Length: 93
Image 1: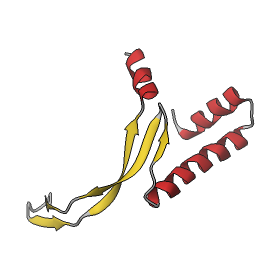
Image 2: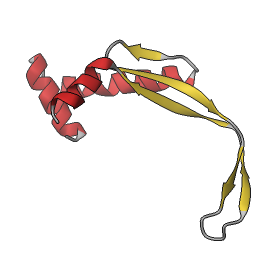
Image 3: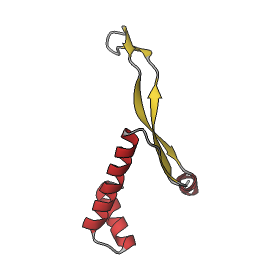
Image 4: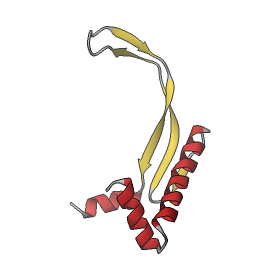
């Protein structure tokens, strides 16, 4: 399912226009991104948790030459799947 299909399904289920459903979806992801970029955790109980995680400095390898190089410490976004999404994935197998 791509974003357009998701927006259409949301609009149908909520009984709103696709434009409104799309605006809500965009607003949700923009809000999550803004909060995570500020270092805040966003938890939607049972569905997902998004948080900023620190990564340690490490030694990497150039895939073309094999030469070692220093990868600096940084941050990444960590997404954790909640129990409702885990259950949904298991029920379809």
